[in-house]
Image 1 (cartoon, rainbow, N blue to C red):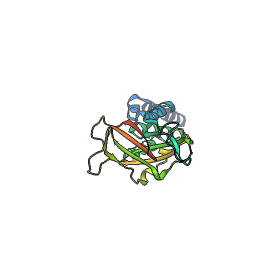
Image 2 (image 1 turned 180 degrees about the vertical axis):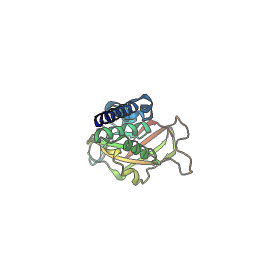
Image 3 (image 1 turned 30 degrees about the horizontal axis):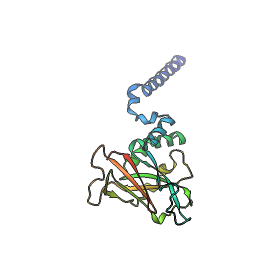
Image 4 (image 1 turned 120 degrees about the horizontal axis):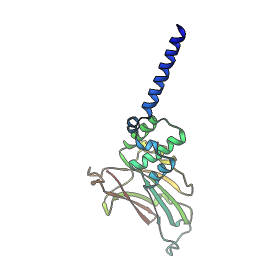
Length: 219
């Protein structure tokens, strides 16, 4: 009698395994997972780079240069960490570090809960001295076309502690990289962004040489 019992148990085990495999691969279950977990590396990188802007602070061959201790032209690029950019970055880290889906989703939720507009700002003094005069470098975030509605960087250790802002994507070490957190509210308590389709402008001023980079953003 043992053989029939063993055979029945084996058949039942196989049926359970087949049922579980069918459930996990069924359309209903797949629909419950966030779509970004299925992104390829190229898709994740594209989502991240879609929120990067580039420009220059200063003019080439600026005749106003009075010192060789400063560059007279700086390459500037910045990434605004929107929900889509965060999804791309987290997916790249998941693929690199082989993180489980649950851990990846938790990481994304924590990043999206940060009470700041976070940007990574990269600067490369590409003409003249290779030094960035940090004592004369200023960053501002403002509503598009409205300098009166602007905020300065805030101290945010919870942002600085997040490796994702520095490690996601391919780093170009010709640039100095700064992770900058800006308050979401103005001094009066009004949101910096008041419209769903609003735009933000990052103002980078380096020793009087400025660049403005524009970003579509959601409040």
